[in-house]
Image (cartoon, rainbow, N blue to C red; front, side):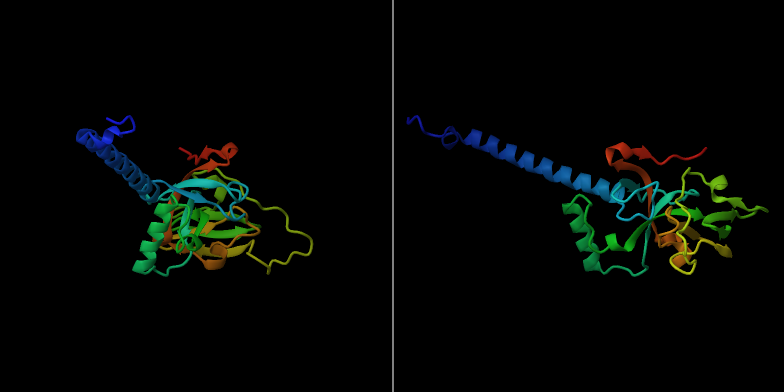
Length: 232
């Protein structure tokens, strides 16, 4: 027998064993890929904040984990909302799902541009008004107004730096508005950067059906790792 003869060429059982090994390896990789993408799509989703709208709490470039599980929104919670009501076609949904699957949820061509990260500051039944960029809230069945910071279930701060000299209140988003009352399943959302953010002051109150996910924690940059804390 030639010394160069490959043992697999003369051993049927070894060929079969090698074939089974390759099949198991491929099966493991595909299963891992599908399970991980299912988790990243339906359980916990990585999202990158791409604007300064949530500064100082979620700076631009921060990556967070959000979940579509659990729709009871807490006052002050950061949420992901759909910017437009327009529904995707079947082809767009499939394309978006596949793009997310092959990029581990980094790219969603048809939904990334339609989602916003904002803070839920007004819940159904609330009466609200704003003065000097601070929100005042009268919860349903309450007799008095409170500042948003007295009522929130999630501690946060807002960027309300003094506008520059000559700043006109007619430019950009309003820093004050009269009382409004939210109806059933209506929410009022604001960005933490109160001077420069497209939020309910521009597009109005939103329906609960537009809330896609709740933000759980930030995980990047590493020095910004933190869970979203809730008050008891």
